[in-house]
Image (cartoon, rainbow, N blue to C red; front, side):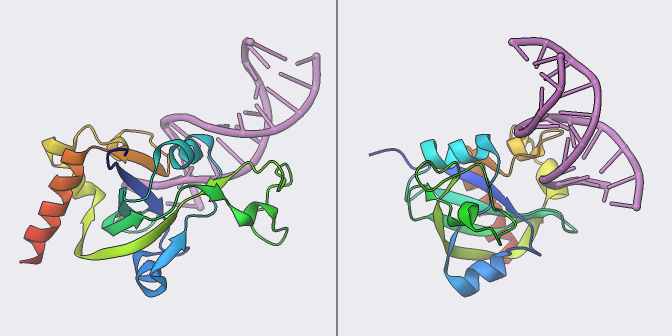
Length: 158
DNA sequence: GCCAACGTTGGC
DNA sequence: GCCAACGTTGGC
């Protein structure tokens, strides 16, 4: 068995928010069109991995909850759908280019932990999402960083 | 296989 | 809405 891994995945709340995930219970993480992010899903994610759900392109941006990975990567159906904004004419069902995992809702934080707040913690200074110029929508998180943020959120709730 | 042009992300 | 960062594309 692979050890459980931890991730941070960005979503624009206008497109798909933590509340959407809470309502739907599960989701396919469709629409990723970046090879590095895809490779994380295809090669490194497995069911049981835990994900920090991050709202980007919003004010303020930050971590808003937790999702659990519940499937391995499978072909992303939107790449074959001409009506989808994620349609990729260079991909084909016999040789799909893009894959996505499925995730399920675990919890929504009582309070968002903002990007500004994340930046104030020396424990988190290595986090990819805090690095200058980072645009990758899926990044690995260490177990220590994940625990730190969970405990932080729990403390905020009290 | 280089690299200029272009497109996208995402914080601000 | 601006723009820095950086990934992708395509001509050569």
